[in-house]
Length: 248
Ligand code: 6PG
Image (cartoon, rainbow, N blue to C red; front, side, top):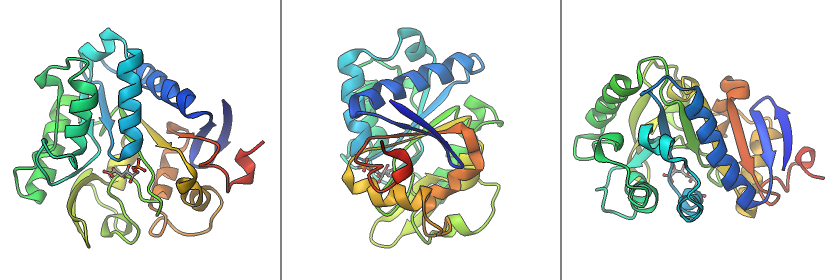
């Protein structure tokens, strides 16, 4: 695996399976340094994490001690029941938490039964009560969309334009309905962020983050710049194909 230092954090380029193993190791490293009882790991949605969940369970890649102490979240969510295939927490539960036998008190889904704005407020309050006010999450895993969105921060989003103290918010997206999401402020207050993106479809989004001049309003993943070295990007060769500095 190759490692590069950038303004947006550390970029690690490797084969998909190497990236899976690295993500498990980053999780274990974050857990080892966390305050006892306050380790919060936020997972994400999309197809990339599903493949990682399956790999993790097959390889038994998470230590029992970590599983016994981790509080599990997702950084963004659709307003659908947990049973839905569209539910990010539901997918994490079915593919990762259930197979590892994680008990209910360590599972912290968004309250999708509330009004979206109330669900965001409840998430802010409840996560602070469990994890403390200092960090949003100890570790927040994110994906990267083909349009360079991350979490549910899409290009042009009102959440990108204004500074706010709110770490979690509800936002209505054209054509997608309501989403609940960590905000740029919430991301800035994470202990560590990992962006996991693979495949040729992500190459232009990766290029726009690392080689483009556009602002974060157009390339939302650029909000991660404020975290500096606290962000790690796990990318495969296809995802970095349009960035000459990460090739070779
Ligand atoms: C979601 C995510 C979203 C996702 C990216 C990448 O709920 O869909 O939070 O930000 O991570 O769209 O998704 P893929 O892994 O499917 O490419």
